[in-house]
Image 1: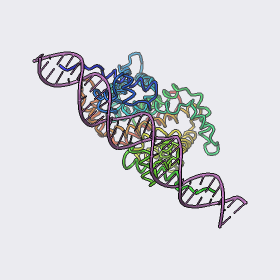
Image 2: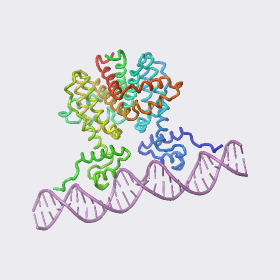
Image 3: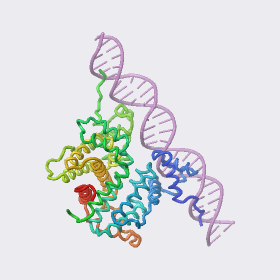
Image 4: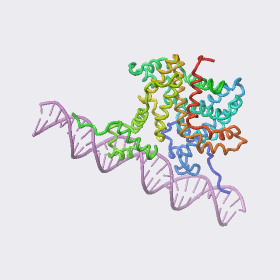
Length: 208
Length: 208
DNA sequence: GACCGTAGGCGTACGGCGTACTCCTACAGC
DNA sequence: GCTGTAGGAGTACGCCGTACGCCTACGGTC
Protein backbone atom coordinates (compact mmCIF):
# COMPACT_ATOMS: atom_id res chain seq x y z
CA UNK A 1 0.00 0.00 0.00
CA UNK A 2 2.66 2.55 0.85
CA UNK A 3 5.06 4.15 -1.51
CA UNK A 4 7.97 1.77 -2.20
CA UNK A 5 11.26 2.37 -0.43
CA UNK A 6 13.82 3.86 -2.72
CA UNK A 7 16.83 2.26 -1.03
CA UNK A 8 17.66 -1.17 0.34
CA UNK A 9 19.57 -1.51 3.60
CA UNK A 10 22.38 -3.03 1.62
CA UNK A 11 22.64 0.02 -0.63
CA UNK A 12 22.74 2.16 2.48
CA UNK A 13 25.55 0.06 3.92
CA UNK A 14 27.41 0.18 0.61
CA UNK A 15 27.17 3.96 0.56
CA UNK A 16 28.51 4.27 4.07
CA UNK A 17 31.30 1.83 3.28
CA UNK A 18 32.20 3.84 0.20
CA UNK A 19 32.64 6.92 2.37
CA UNK A 20 34.77 4.98 4.85
CA UNK A 21 36.94 3.40 2.17
CA UNK A 22 37.47 6.67 0.37
CA UNK A 23 37.78 9.23 3.17
CA UNK A 24 38.49 7.18 6.28
CA UNK A 25 36.43 6.21 9.28
CA UNK A 26 36.60 9.70 10.78
CA UNK A 27 34.74 11.02 7.74
CA UNK A 28 31.77 8.76 8.42
CA UNK A 29 28.79 10.84 9.49
CA UNK A 30 25.10 10.90 8.79
CA UNK A 31 25.69 13.96 6.63
CA UNK A 32 28.47 12.51 4.49
CA UNK A 33 26.60 9.26 3.92
CA UNK A 34 23.46 11.18 2.95
CA UNK A 35 25.45 13.21 0.48
CA UNK A 36 27.01 10.02 -0.90
CA UNK A 37 23.53 8.63 -1.54
CA UNK A 38 22.16 11.90 -2.89
CA UNK A 39 19.61 12.46 -0.17
CA UNK A 40 19.10 14.82 2.72
CA UNK A 41 20.86 14.11 6.02
CA UNK A 42 17.64 13.38 7.87
CA UNK A 43 16.51 10.99 5.17
CA UNK A 44 18.77 8.29 6.56
CA UNK A 45 16.64 8.09 9.66
CA UNK A 46 13.94 6.41 7.62
CA UNK A 47 16.22 3.40 7.30
CA UNK A 48 18.10 3.38 10.57
CA UNK A 49 17.11 4.72 13.94
CA UNK A 50 20.59 5.66 14.89
CA UNK A 51 24.16 6.14 13.82
CA UNK A 52 24.93 2.98 15.72
CA UNK A 53 22.51 1.04 13.57
CA UNK A 54 24.16 2.42 10.45
CA UNK A 55 27.48 1.12 11.70
CA UNK A 56 25.94 -2.29 12.30
CA UNK A 57 24.68 -2.32 8.72
CA UNK A 58 28.19 -1.58 7.48
CA UNK A 59 29.61 -4.46 9.50
CA UNK A 60 26.88 -6.80 8.31
CA UNK A 61 27.76 -5.79 4.76
CA UNK A 62 31.48 -6.42 5.28
CA UNK A 63 31.03 -9.75 7.04
CA UNK A 64 28.33 -10.76 4.60
CA UNK A 65 31.01 -10.93 1.92
CA UNK A 66 32.78 -13.70 3.85
CA UNK A 67 32.06 -17.19 2.56
CA UNK A 68 30.70 -19.14 5.53
CA UNK A 69 30.38 -22.47 3.74
CA UNK A 70 32.38 -25.40 5.11
CA UNK A 71 35.61 -25.72 3.11
CA UNK A 72 35.72 -28.89 1.05
CA UNK A 73 39.22 -28.86 -0.35
CA UNK A 74 41.05 -29.18 2.98
CA UNK A 75 42.24 -32.57 4.12
CA UNK A 76 42.34 -31.97 7.88
CA UNK A 77 40.05 -30.12 10.26
CA UNK A 78 42.94 -27.87 11.22
CA UNK A 79 43.29 -26.86 7.62
CA UNK A 80 39.57 -26.18 7.39
CA UNK A 81 39.76 -23.82 10.35
CA UNK A 82 42.75 -22.09 8.83
CA UNK A 83 40.72 -21.52 5.69
CA UNK A 84 37.82 -20.11 7.70
CA UNK A 85 40.12 -17.77 9.60
CA UNK A 86 41.80 -16.69 6.38
CA UNK A 87 38.47 -15.92 4.75
CA UNK A 88 37.39 -13.79 7.70
CA UNK A 89 40.70 -11.97 7.68
CA UNK A 90 40.51 -11.34 3.95
CA UNK A 91 36.99 -10.00 4.23
CA UNK A 92 37.82 -7.67 7.08
CA UNK A 93 41.11 -6.45 5.66
CA UNK A 94 39.43 -5.57 2.38
CA UNK A 95 38.11 -2.52 4.27
CA UNK A 96 40.94 -1.54 6.59
CA UNK A 97 39.41 1.74 7.65
CA UNK A 98 36.31 -0.07 8.87
CA UNK A 99 38.20 -2.49 11.10
CA UNK A 100 37.34 -0.74 14.37
CA UNK A 101 33.67 -0.93 13.43
CA UNK A 102 33.94 -4.55 12.39
CA UNK A 103 35.49 -5.50 15.70
CA UNK A 104 33.00 -3.46 17.67
CA UNK A 105 29.84 -4.85 16.08
CA UNK A 106 30.93 -8.30 15.00
CA UNK A 107 29.24 -10.06 17.89
CA UNK A 108 25.85 -8.69 16.88
CA UNK A 109 26.18 -9.62 13.23
CA UNK A 110 24.27 -12.46 11.62
CA UNK A 111 27.06 -13.08 9.13
CA UNK A 112 29.46 -13.36 12.05
CA UNK A 113 27.24 -15.96 13.64
CA UNK A 114 27.18 -17.98 10.43
CA UNK A 115 30.97 -18.01 10.47
CA UNK A 116 30.96 -19.21 14.07
CA UNK A 117 28.43 -21.91 13.25
CA UNK A 118 30.66 -23.33 10.56
CA UNK A 119 33.74 -23.23 12.78
CA UNK A 120 31.80 -24.97 15.54
CA UNK A 121 30.84 -27.65 13.06
CA UNK A 122 34.48 -28.25 12.23
CA UNK A 123 35.42 -28.37 15.90
CA UNK A 124 32.63 -30.83 16.63
CA UNK A 125 33.72 -33.04 13.77
CA UNK A 126 37.23 -32.99 15.31
CA UNK A 127 35.82 -34.49 18.47
CA UNK A 128 35.87 -31.34 20.56
CA UNK A 129 32.74 -30.73 22.59
CA UNK A 130 31.30 -29.40 25.85
CA UNK A 131 32.99 -26.47 27.54
CA UNK A 132 36.19 -27.32 25.70
CA UNK A 133 34.42 -26.38 22.50
CA UNK A 134 33.21 -23.13 24.03
CA UNK A 135 36.74 -22.21 25.03
CA UNK A 136 38.11 -23.20 21.64
CA UNK A 137 35.62 -21.05 19.71
CA UNK A 138 36.17 -18.04 21.93
CA UNK A 139 39.93 -18.45 21.71
CA UNK A 140 39.83 -18.62 17.93
CA UNK A 141 37.48 -15.68 17.78
CA UNK A 142 39.64 -13.68 20.17
CA UNK A 143 42.86 -14.50 18.39
CA UNK A 144 41.55 -13.67 14.93
CA UNK A 145 40.03 -10.42 16.13
CA UNK A 146 43.13 -9.35 18.01
CA UNK A 147 45.57 -10.40 15.30
CA UNK A 148 43.68 -8.48 12.62
CA UNK A 149 43.70 -5.34 14.74
CA UNK A 150 47.38 -5.71 15.50
CA UNK A 151 48.14 -6.18 11.85
CA UNK A 152 46.24 -3.02 11.02
CA UNK A 153 47.31 -0.80 13.95
CA UNK A 154 50.97 -1.70 13.94
CA UNK A 155 52.17 -3.92 11.12
CA UNK A 156 55.37 -5.79 11.86
CA UNK A 157 57.05 -4.15 8.91
CA UNK A 158 55.82 -0.69 9.90
CA UNK A 159 57.22 2.32 11.67
CA UNK A 160 56.25 0.98 15.08
CA UNK A 161 58.78 -1.79 14.71
CA UNK A 162 61.37 0.67 13.49
CA UNK A 163 60.73 2.85 16.54
CA UNK A 164 61.19 -0.16 18.80
CA UNK A 165 64.45 -1.09 17.13
CA UNK A 166 65.65 2.44 17.90
CA UNK A 167 64.88 2.17 21.63
CA UNK A 168 67.75 2.16 24.11
CA UNK A 169 69.05 -1.38 24.02
CA UNK A 170 69.97 -1.15 27.69
CA UNK A 171 66.37 -0.91 28.84
CA UNK A 172 64.86 -3.17 26.21
CA UNK A 173 67.45 -5.77 25.20
CA UNK A 174 65.07 -8.42 23.91
CA UNK A 175 62.66 -6.01 22.30
CA UNK A 176 65.30 -4.24 20.24
CA UNK A 177 66.82 -7.52 19.15
CA UNK A 178 63.44 -9.00 18.26
CA UNK A 179 62.46 -5.89 16.32
CA UNK A 180 65.43 -6.43 14.04
CA UNK A 181 64.30 -9.94 13.07
CA UNK A 182 60.67 -8.84 12.85
CA UNK A 183 61.17 -7.40 9.40
CA UNK A 184 61.67 -10.87 7.98
CA UNK A 185 58.24 -12.01 9.11
CA UNK A 186 55.50 -11.26 6.61
CA UNK A 187 51.87 -10.65 7.58
CA UNK A 188 50.72 -14.09 6.45
CA UNK A 189 53.45 -15.87 8.38
CA UNK A 190 52.50 -13.82 11.41
CA UNK A 191 48.77 -14.47 11.19
CA UNK A 192 48.83 -18.16 10.28
CA UNK A 193 51.87 -18.88 12.43
CA UNK A 194 50.04 -17.68 15.51
CA UNK A 195 46.87 -19.46 14.45
CA UNK A 196 48.76 -22.74 14.08
CA UNK A 197 50.03 -22.37 17.62
CA UNK A 198 46.44 -22.28 18.78
CA UNK A 199 45.46 -25.22 16.61
CA UNK A 200 48.42 -27.25 17.81
CA UNK A 201 47.33 -26.57 21.37
CA UNK A 202 43.86 -27.69 20.46
CA UNK A 203 45.05 -30.98 19.02
CA UNK A 204 45.43 -34.02 21.23
CA UNK A 205 44.48 -34.56 24.83
CA UNK A 206 42.46 -31.89 26.64
CA UNK A 207 44.98 -31.41 29.49
CA UNK A 208 48.61 -32.22 28.83
CA UNK B 1 62.63 30.68 35.06
CA UNK B 2 59.02 30.34 34.01
CA UNK B 3 56.03 29.90 36.23
CA UNK B 4 55.78 26.26 37.38
CA UNK B 5 53.21 23.99 35.79
CA UNK B 6 50.24 23.41 38.00
CA UNK B 7 49.44 19.91 36.79
CA UNK B 8 51.46 16.82 35.99
CA UNK B 9 50.60 14.71 32.95
CA UNK B 10 49.69 11.91 35.31
CA UNK B 11 47.16 14.09 37.12
CA UNK B 12 45.71 14.99 33.74
CA UNK B 13 45.43 11.32 32.82
CA UNK B 14 43.88 10.51 36.19
CA UNK B 15 41.27 13.22 35.69
CA UNK B 16 40.36 11.92 32.26
CA UNK B 17 40.19 8.38 33.57
CA UNK B 18 37.92 9.50 36.40
CA UNK B 19 35.50 10.92 33.83
CA UNK B 20 35.62 7.71 31.80
CA UNK B 21 35.13 5.46 34.81
CA UNK B 22 32.27 7.52 36.17
CA UNK B 23 30.38 8.60 33.05
CA UNK B 24 31.57 6.27 30.31
CA UNK B 25 33.86 6.66 27.36
CA UNK B 26 31.30 8.65 25.39
CA UNK B 27 31.40 11.32 28.09
CA UNK B 28 35.11 11.91 27.54
CA UNK B 29 35.66 15.31 26.00
CA UNK B 30 38.09 18.15 26.44
CA UNK B 31 35.33 20.08 28.17
CA UNK B 32 34.36 17.36 30.66
CA UNK B 33 37.98 16.66 31.57
CA UNK B 34 38.65 20.37 32.06
CA UNK B 35 35.65 20.63 34.35
CA UNK B 36 36.85 17.57 36.26
CA UNK B 37 40.19 19.28 36.85
CA UNK B 38 38.65 22.65 37.63
CA UNK B 39 40.15 24.50 34.71
CA UNK B 40 38.93 25.99 31.48
CA UNK B 41 38.49 23.77 28.42
CA UNK B 42 41.29 25.40 26.52
CA UNK B 43 43.66 25.02 29.43
CA UNK B 44 44.17 21.36 28.58
CA UNK B 45 45.96 22.33 25.43
CA UNK B 46 48.90 23.50 27.48
CA UNK B 47 49.52 19.86 28.40
CA UNK B 48 48.45 18.00 25.29
CA UNK B 49 48.37 19.12 21.72
CA UNK B 50 45.38 17.07 20.89
CA UNK B 51 42.53 14.94 22.10
CA UNK B 52 44.43 11.98 20.72
CA UNK B 53 47.37 12.78 22.96
CA UNK B 54 45.04 12.94 25.95
CA UNK B 55 43.81 9.46 25.12
CA UNK B 56 47.39 8.24 24.92
CA UNK B 57 48.05 9.65 28.36
CA UNK B 58 45.06 7.75 29.71
CA UNK B 59 46.31 4.50 28.22
CA UNK B 60 49.80 5.10 29.57
CA UNK B 61 48.24 5.64 32.99
CA UNK B 62 46.21 2.44 32.80
CA UNK B 63 49.05 0.27 31.52
CA UNK B 64 51.47 1.92 33.90
CA UNK B 65 49.62 0.24 36.73
CA UNK B 66 50.53 -3.18 35.35
CA UNK B 67 53.49 -4.81 37.07
CA UNK B 68 56.03 -5.56 34.34
CA UNK B 69 58.54 -7.29 36.57
CA UNK B 70 59.39 -10.91 35.77
CA UNK B 71 57.30 -13.18 38.01
CA UNK B 72 59.40 -15.09 40.51
CA UNK B 73 56.90 -17.41 42.12
CA UNK B 74 56.08 -19.44 39.01
CA UNK B 75 57.81 -22.75 38.45
CA UNK B 76 57.54 -22.97 34.65
CA UNK B 77 57.92 -20.42 31.90
CA UNK B 78 54.36 -21.15 30.79
CA UNK B 79 53.17 -20.20 34.22
CA UNK B 80 55.18 -17.00 34.10
CA UNK B 81 53.54 -16.00 30.85
CA UNK B 82 50.14 -16.79 32.29
CA UNK B 83 50.92 -14.47 35.17
CA UNK B 84 52.00 -11.72 32.78
CA UNK B 85 48.84 -12.11 30.72
CA UNK B 86 46.72 -12.14 33.85
CA UNK B 87 48.32 -8.95 35.13
CA UNK B 88 47.70 -7.17 31.85
CA UNK B 89 44.11 -8.36 31.82
CA UNK B 90 43.54 -7.25 35.40
CA UNK B 91 44.99 -3.82 34.70
CA UNK B 92 42.90 -3.29 31.60
CA UNK B 93 39.69 -4.67 33.05
CA UNK B 94 39.99 -2.38 36.04
CA UNK B 95 38.79 0.35 33.67
CA UNK B 96 36.29 -1.41 31.42
CA UNK B 97 35.00 1.76 29.79
CA UNK B 98 38.50 2.64 28.65
CA UNK B 99 39.13 -0.69 26.90
CA UNK B 100 38.63 0.64 23.37
CA UNK B 101 41.22 3.32 24.09
CA UNK B 102 43.60 0.85 25.65
CA UNK B 103 43.45 -1.39 22.62
CA UNK B 104 43.78 1.50 20.22
CA UNK B 105 46.85 3.11 21.80
CA UNK B 106 48.57 0.16 23.43
CA UNK B 107 51.19 -0.20 20.72
CA UNK B 108 52.42 3.35 21.32
CA UNK B 109 52.64 2.99 25.08
CA UNK B 110 55.92 2.70 26.93
CA UNK B 111 54.32 0.63 29.68
CA UNK B 112 53.06 -1.74 26.99
CA UNK B 113 56.59 -2.09 25.66
CA UNK B 114 57.89 -2.94 29.11
CA UNK B 115 55.33 -5.73 29.33
CA UNK B 116 56.42 -7.04 25.94
CA UNK B 117 60.07 -6.88 26.99
CA UNK B 118 59.41 -9.08 30.00
CA UNK B 119 57.36 -11.57 27.98
CA UNK B 120 60.14 -11.73 25.40
CA UNK B 121 62.61 -12.47 28.19
CA UNK B 122 60.49 -15.39 29.33
CA UNK B 123 60.17 -16.71 25.78
CA UNK B 124 63.91 -16.42 25.24
CA UNK B 125 64.59 -18.27 28.45
CA UNK B 126 62.26 -21.00 27.17
CA UNK B 127 64.52 -21.47 24.17
CA UNK B 128 62.31 -19.70 21.66
CA UNK B 129 64.14 -17.31 19.35
CA UNK B 130 64.37 -15.87 15.85
CA UNK B 131 61.20 -15.38 13.86
CA UNK B 132 59.52 -18.03 16.00
CA UNK B 133 59.83 -15.63 18.91
CA UNK B 134 58.39 -12.80 16.85
CA UNK B 135 55.38 -14.89 15.94
CA UNK B 136 54.94 -16.04 19.53
CA UNK B 137 54.95 -12.53 20.94
CA UNK B 138 52.53 -11.22 18.35
CA UNK B 139 50.24 -14.22 18.87
CA UNK B 140 50.20 -13.70 22.62
CA UNK B 141 49.66 -10.00 22.17
CA UNK B 142 46.88 -10.58 19.67
CA UNK B 143 45.16 -13.20 21.75
CA UNK B 144 45.24 -11.18 24.96
CA UNK B 145 43.98 -8.08 23.20
CA UNK B 146 41.20 -9.91 21.40
CA UNK B 147 40.13 -11.96 24.38
CA UNK B 148 39.85 -8.93 26.63
CA UNK B 149 37.70 -7.15 24.09
CA UNK B 150 35.50 -10.19 23.62
CA UNK B 151 35.09 -10.52 27.34
CA UNK B 152 34.02 -6.91 27.57
CA UNK B 153 31.88 -6.60 24.43
CA UNK B 154 30.02 -9.87 24.78
CA UNK B 155 30.63 -11.81 27.98
CA UNK B 156 29.85 -15.51 27.72
CA UNK B 157 27.31 -15.20 30.50
CA UNK B 158 25.70 -12.14 28.93
CA UNK B 159 22.66 -11.40 26.81
CA UNK B 160 24.52 -12.09 23.59
CA UNK B 161 24.81 -15.73 24.53
CA UNK B 162 21.15 -15.78 25.54
CA UNK B 163 20.22 -14.31 22.16
CA UNK B 164 22.24 -17.00 20.41
CA UNK B 165 20.57 -19.74 22.42
CA UNK B 166 17.23 -18.37 21.21
CA UNK B 167 18.20 -18.54 17.51
CA UNK B 168 16.38 -20.99 15.24
CA UNK B 169 18.08 -24.32 15.93
CA UNK B 170 17.53 -25.37 12.33
CA UNK B 171 19.91 -22.77 10.92
CA UNK B 172 22.39 -22.78 13.78
CA UNK B 173 22.43 -26.27 15.32
CA UNK B 174 25.93 -26.12 16.83
CA UNK B 175 25.72 -22.51 17.93
CA UNK B 176 22.48 -22.94 19.86
CA UNK B 177 23.76 -26.07 21.52
CA UNK B 178 27.10 -24.47 22.40
CA UNK B 179 25.38 -21.39 23.80
CA UNK B 180 23.59 -23.58 26.31
CA UNK B 181 26.84 -24.95 27.71
CA UNK B 182 28.53 -21.55 27.53
CA UNK B 183 26.91 -20.43 30.75
CA UNK B 184 29.01 -22.92 32.70
CA UNK B 185 32.25 -21.36 31.51
CA UNK B 186 33.41 -18.49 33.70
CA UNK B 187 35.52 -15.58 32.43
CA UNK B 188 38.73 -16.89 33.99
CA UNK B 189 38.29 -20.35 32.52
CA UNK B 190 37.64 -18.74 29.16
CA UNK B 191 40.65 -16.42 29.25
CA UNK B 192 43.23 -18.80 30.67
CA UNK B 193 41.80 -21.82 28.87
CA UNK B 194 42.39 -20.12 25.53
CA UNK B 195 45.78 -18.86 26.63
CA UNK B 196 46.84 -22.38 27.60
CA UNK B 197 45.93 -23.60 24.13
CA UNK B 198 48.41 -21.08 22.74
CA UNK B 199 51.07 -22.02 25.26
CA UNK B 200 50.61 -25.70 24.57
CA UNK B 201 51.09 -24.99 20.89
CA UNK B 202 54.22 -23.07 21.72
CA UNK B 203 55.69 -25.93 23.72
CA UNK B 204 57.78 -28.56 21.98
CA UNK B 205 59.04 -28.80 18.44
CA UNK B 206 58.57 -25.79 16.13
CA UNK B 207 56.70 -27.72 13.40
CA UNK B 208 54.79 -30.84 14.38
C1' DG C 1 63.86 46.20 43.21
C1' DA C 2 62.84 46.27 38.01
C1' DC C 3 62.07 43.51 33.91
C1' DC C 4 60.97 39.87 30.94
C1' DG C 5 59.58 35.40 29.36
C1' DT C 6 56.71 31.72 30.10
C1' DA C 7 52.58 29.32 32.17
C1' DG C 8 48.10 30.12 33.91
C1' DG C 9 43.56 31.29 33.14
C1' DC C 10 39.38 32.84 30.67
C1' DG C 11 36.28 34.00 26.88
C1' DT C 12 34.86 34.05 22.21
C1' DA C 13 34.11 31.93 17.83
C1' DC C 14 33.85 28.57 13.95
C1' DG C 15 32.58 24.64 11.65
C1' DG C 16 30.97 20.00 12.17
C1' DC C 17 28.45 16.53 14.57
C1' DG C 18 23.89 13.60 15.87
C1' DT C 19 19.33 14.16 15.78
C1' DA C 20 14.40 16.11 17.06
C1' DC C 21 10.77 18.42 14.67
C1' DT C 22 7.81 20.29 11.03
C1' DC C 23 5.76 20.81 6.46
C1' DC C 24 4.75 19.46 1.96
C1' DT C 25 4.65 16.02 -2.03
C1' DA C 26 4.18 11.52 -4.43
C1' DC C 27 2.59 7.26 -4.86
C1' DA C 28 -0.16 2.29 -4.07
C1' DG C 29 -4.01 -0.08 -2.53
C1' DC C 30 -8.98 0.03 -0.70
C1' DG D 1 -10.65 9.31 -5.04
C1' DC D 2 -9.24 8.84 -0.34
C1' DT D 3 -5.83 7.50 2.91
C1' DG D 4 -1.61 6.08 4.77
C1' DT D 5 3.06 5.75 4.24
C1' DA D 6 7.61 7.01 2.11
C1' DG D 7 10.17 10.68 0.13
C1' DG D 8 12.34 14.94 0.49
C1' DA D 9 13.77 19.46 2.45
C1' DG D 10 14.65 22.75 6.01
C1' DT D 11 15.37 24.52 10.63
C1' DA D 12 17.15 24.25 15.18
C1' DC D 13 19.53 22.64 19.49
C1' DG D 14 23.22 21.36 22.15
C1' DC D 15 27.20 19.04 21.94
C1' DC D 16 32.08 18.51 20.05
C1' DG D 17 37.38 19.78 18.94
C1' DT D 18 40.06 23.54 18.73
C1' DA D 19 42.08 28.27 16.77
C1' DC D 20 42.87 32.71 18.73
C1' DG D 21 43.45 36.64 21.75
C1' DC D 22 43.90 39.03 26.03
C1' DC D 23 45.17 39.74 30.50
C1' DT D 24 47.60 37.94 35.13
C1' DA D 25 51.07 35.66 38.03
C1' DC D 26 55.28 34.15 38.87
C1' DG D 27 60.68 33.06 38.87
C1' DG D 28 64.75 33.89 37.00
C1' DT D 29 68.47 37.57 35.47
C1' DC D 30 70.06 42.18 35.84
